Length: 245
Image (cartoon, rainbow, N blue to C red; front, side, top):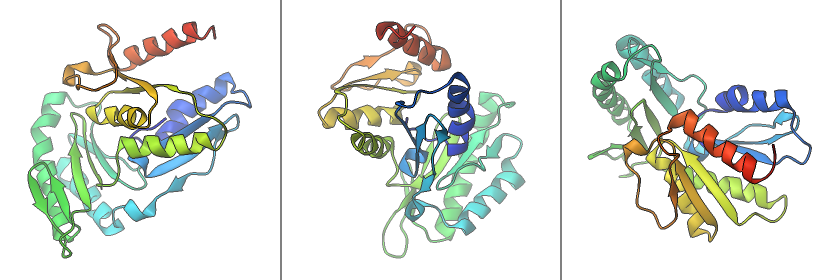
């Protein structure tokens, strides 16, 4: 699995329930988090050792400055995700409605951009670009409807998919048929990589109201279902198809 979440989230929300049900010894699963910056194997005993690509991580002084920004100026609508290890994610509080968050997010984005610029890191956000002293722009702000990620420009879901495939290839031949599932447009990049590598792939978009992207492979939507409900229905379909029930 690849995502922009944290290893802690995967451990608590995905691996723990799977372990409670029991995983076979032959089970093959791999986690790639933070868009490729964090990765680990998952087996019958749970999560293996967590690896972090420190070369793409934000400097600690900048992380601290961003945390302070959230706590002092935006804590009424956002929270700083303390579980991230290489990138920074500032997310909508679950007790705050969408309109209140959207009203504050632009001000946070500008303030965060200014912090990276002030520290001379080199950053871009939409049409704003502030190169570092070497003329490079190694970091970006990526705003979604529920969060803003501050991350290395080298991180993305296609790189995460590539890392996962490399791991699975070490254990034997890879299947030709793949399905990716996601709730954001950046999730299509997992399927992009698989398609470009020659695999039979379809992407399941569980939030199609954001706009279904035009791709050279099939894009699946689960009728009127969205988010967790759509993902659950998709998994139910494959459980039945593979005769696992």
